[in-house]
Length: 556
Image (cartoon, rainbow, N blue to C red; front, side, top):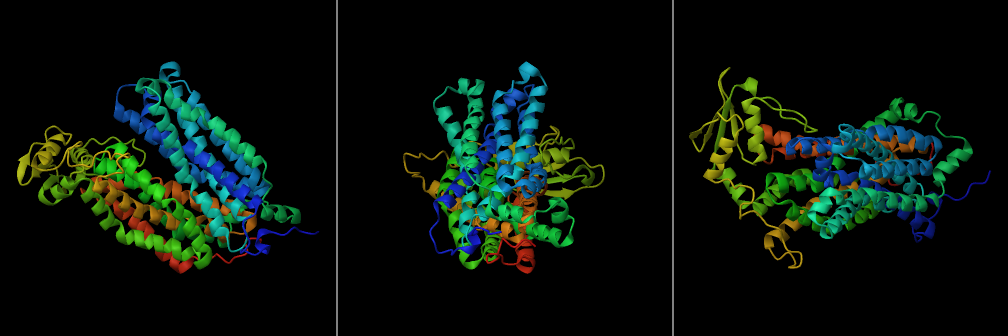
């Protein structure tokens, strides 16, 4: 049997062919639209909660939407297992056509779902079901797109080709925000709240149609087609990938020595930075989003740069350098972000002393990854209240049965309100800023070229965080593809990627907040990404091989 030339058989110095450009555009466009669909739930959380959750408790409503958003992250590894297996059995092309269709239809259905007033509790149940479907679909999409592009790439250019896939999460987030912004600017607030928020979800059917049309024009990947023609496909990809120690070991090392660190750096630079600005530093949401948007616009081309560079010097040096540099510099960078955005807060941390004393039995863990726990003891409630208001405190344990006691700059503060608000008020009277304080950075004017020097400084600091993101994320797709043989590649690479990004990364904000609330230190949450990034640096340095020169057509 004669076999057509594969991408690895041609020189890397030649120019990209029209067919290769079509592969990259089709794969990237489809993945952009999937990320667009996935992020809409987070961007429109307030509108979703008002329509699908009964009652007037806004906190309960918001927690519900956070739970729905977290559910999408939680099921991603299961989608990776299910669709990864299909991808290794029936092919890359048809599997990511299925994942894209599921994502698009689930998103479209959210736009059509009747609210709680029409169908009662079926509304929130149906919304969560759609989020689960989206998470499952996303779990299968990324591995398919990355594998498909890599298997069309010539030797020596896989990092560059697959780096275009790495831009899709950021571009998908941009697209969702732009569509929402255009609608808000062209509708009254009342109309947007009544029905306008549904339009971005409904538009997904158009994006789905376009994505299917462009992807249906593609052929199966050369590597899979060759394996199919030779009859060497795996009969049981899951068993072969994770039931055999030689392959399972690669998956574990890929997770701990690659995607775990990549994920926490990625989520710290894009999501935790936004959380830190809005929730900790009390910068208004519009300002924070503008600052993050400019940083992302400046940083996104570096995904391509580091993907290209990884073809020259290797995947491993760039990925591990990104993890190490991020871990070393997070504390000074976030400290400078705080000092720039809310100088009164950083000053108060040094000058206002808040002390709590409580029975240790009443001070439990504050970990709440999906926002559904209810805290009732005075110690836990007070600590969460102080953390929510970004007030630094020190906790000392009293004798068994002793009530909660609080001091601000040595003066006793009543804690009989059992919610910590009296302590917050005393701390703010002593120097801590309230939300809306005039010293907090206000919305910069885009038309005025962001003339506030503090805004420009923050964009520069956030840009540095985004560069770290591009260092770890730009080369990761090529590295994962090259770690696994063709017969189990889709399955093998998808699971460590989605455990890393869905669990290690997706639950970073609530984990970091729990650490802040438990310690009373607004920077304490940074220890989570720092420790994970350092773990990945050490494990990756010792155990992960360099993969850039591997022949990905080898099938053993």
